[in-house]
Image (cartoon, rainbow, N blue to C red; front, side, top):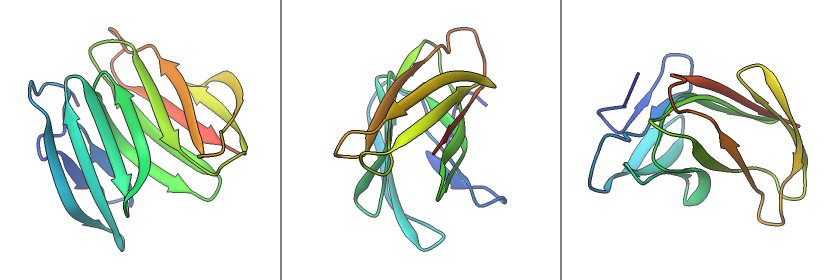
Length: 136
């Protein structure tokens, strides 16, 4: 995949793909309509960030490319790719415990803070696309 050249796009299955870690300067796209929501993406080699209806949803440092990003009432799933290991933060329900699976391996349970944020690391260097599932 490497990068989403249009910065963000809707997929046939209702998910979104976003992010271009190959950019050297911060680039953003606002007011992207997806299934009744308004999305905003900011991306470049240092960071990728996604907001939905003005609320935080995803951030990685350094920047990543994300495909098949889908929210459900039980969590979030997506595939992520980048040139090096990344710290990822996602916005979920506050003060809730979630199980994190990275490439089918259980990375354990974590509880979100009062702001609903959950942070974890993903080894991406040389790994290609890595599947992440976060479930209640």
